[in-house]
Image (cartoon, rainbow, N blue to C red; front, top):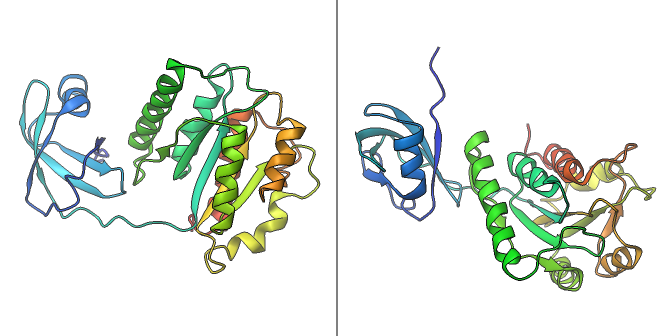
Length: 262
C-alpha cells in the first residue's frame, strides 16, 4: 500500500508563479529537516504547501546535506479562500493548554489565531515573552499544518489585551463579522444559531470569530465590554470544557454548519 508523501512548508511565494516541471529548492529549516532528519532521498515524493493555501506534489532530484532539489510533478493548486473565515481568540493559559488549543484549532481549519492576555490569564506575556510566545504559537501552527496536510497556514496575530481586543472586534463587527464568545453560564446554545450559521456566506458574513477565556473564565467586566462591542455570548454545550478544548470544539461545529465539511 503506497505511503502518503510527507508535507513540507514553503514560507515564501515560490509557488505563486510555479508550473509543472519547474525546479525548486527546499532549503532553510524545512530543507534541513527533510534532508537530515527525515532523510528523504532522490526519487521520493513530498507535498509542498504555502501560507496562501497552494499545494503541489514534488519529486526529489538531488539530496544535499541541508537541502533538497525538487521537480514539481504538477502545477500548484490554486489558493481558494474559504468563506466565512474562522478565527479563534484564545486566552493565554497555563500548562501548555493554550498551545494545545492552537494546535487543534489549526487542524480544524482556523484561518486566524489571536493570543489574548485576559484579566484572569495566569500566564501573562510581557517584554520578550510577547515576541517569543507569538513565535511559539506560529511554530505550533506550522507543525500542525504539516501533520494534517491542510492548505494554508493560519495567521497568528500580535498578542492583545482586552481593551485592544474590544477595539479590534468592534471594527470587525462594523465590517460584518460575527463574534461569538463561549460562556458556560449562557442560556443561548451555539446550535440554536444553526440556521443563521448555515446561511452565513449568503448573508455576507466573511468571518466568524470565536472567543475563548482562560482557565478561570472570562471576567464579568470583560464579558460586558465584549458584548458592548457587538459580540454574542453562547453556550457551547452541557459540559464545561477546558480552555484547550472549547475553541477547537466550537470550530468543529462551525466547520460543519458553514459547509466546510461535506
